[in-house]
Amino acid sequence: MNINLTLFAQMITFAVFVGFCMKYIWPPIVNALAERKAKISEGLAAAERGHQEKALGEQRALELLKDAKASAAEVVTQAQKRATDIIEEAKVDARSEGDRLVAAAQAEIERETNRAREELREKVALLAMAAAEKILQKEIDVRTHRSIVDDFAKQL
Amino acid sequence: MASSETLTSQEYIQHHLTNLTLGWHPEHGLQFAHDSADAAQMGFWAINVDTMFFSILLGSLFIWFFKGVAERVTAGVPGAAQNFVEWIVDFVEENVRGSFSGKNPMVAPLALTIFVWVFLMNLMDLIPVDLIPHLFAQLMAVFGADPHHVYLKVVPTTDPNATFGMALAVFFMVLYYSIKMKGVGGFLGELTLQPFGKWGMPANLILEGISLLSKPVSLALRLFGNLYAGEMIFILIALLYGGGVVLATTAGVLQFVWAVFHILIITLQAFIFMVLTIVYLDMAHQEHH
Image 1 (cartoon, helix red, strand yellow):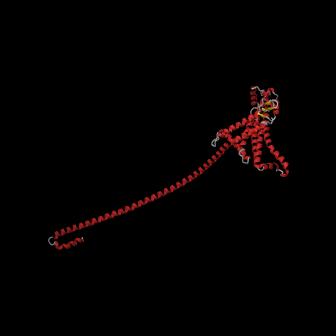
Image 2 (spheres, rainbow over the protein chains, first blue to last red):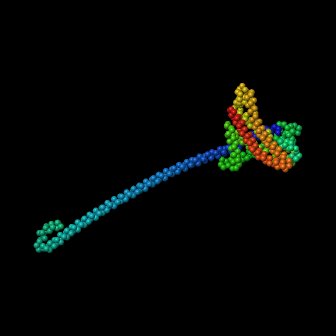
Image 3 (cartoon, rainbow over the protein chains, first blue to last red):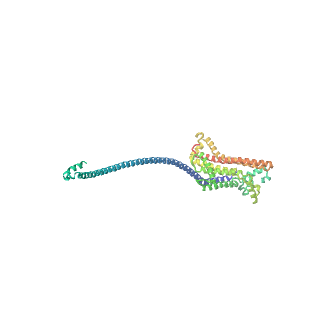
């Protein structure tokens, strides 16, 4: 248990170990620890950011959905309005076409009636003439009584 | 206990407390000391080979293991060894951060080295007291040495040379940083101008000087005393093994109980040495304490 040279040898040994530890052991380990710490906090921040972005995205999706629903409803309304319009238009067209056809038919009927009446009138005049000719063959000269007969025929 | 059959208890204890000393004997020249009287005659110019061997071996073990981890260190998922090393490094760093307010990249590695190295040296105390010395004596006997004069102390921290070596190194660092941080004048002022002001200079110097010198002494003696006493108790318990079945059984139980208790002591002493080193260096870095 004497104090001897071992004292200084131990001091040197100690200094060497401390120096070695300081140069080669401590820095890499502490750096790795710091790096891991940074990584973890970074990861946590990223997770937090992701969380916020997700909430934001959900909000946006909800808004988009609402917009889409609104525009779809508008489209449907417009389509319905347009359909009604088309139907109305068609009704109006059909009615006017019908009126036109009816008018044409009536005109045709009128014309036909007039024509038939004219024909009839002529035929009746002829028949009357013939009958009158036959009745008055002897008394009436066609040439002299012509104007009378014509008047009569006109009144018919 | 093989060797104690021919030794008295006193001789046995003495044998266990003697270092393997290599030195220059005034009469016989360079040789290993045959007994403590021989070692005493060698005076200062001798070296305790066992202390040096085991302390360097354990320090190298520390360096090798930690260096291995430091080379493969990753910021990702750590392996088992790295996890263990990180646990210790974290523990040391936390202590340094808590006690050391200055900025000095040397303090934390210093604290780590002290903690692990002192712990490992203390740990040698848990190896049964006779195991390594006995094997070593038998080995030396093969080379023709007298086994009763082959000494070996396996716990370097029971050698005051080792504890004072560390404590003095710490002390020199305290002096160095005191002067570096405060200047020669500041350091001398700290020694002489308080607590009584400039008119009480001699009294201040005595008080502060004692307080300064007590640091390495208390640091070294605390560790040495605890481990020396622990070692002594292990030796005393080991003496009981020679006293028949009942005593041997008692000794077995005692040794176990003391070893378990000693686990606490060796860790605590390593921790105290580290913390006090940090605190002393912190005081050296501060303007006022």
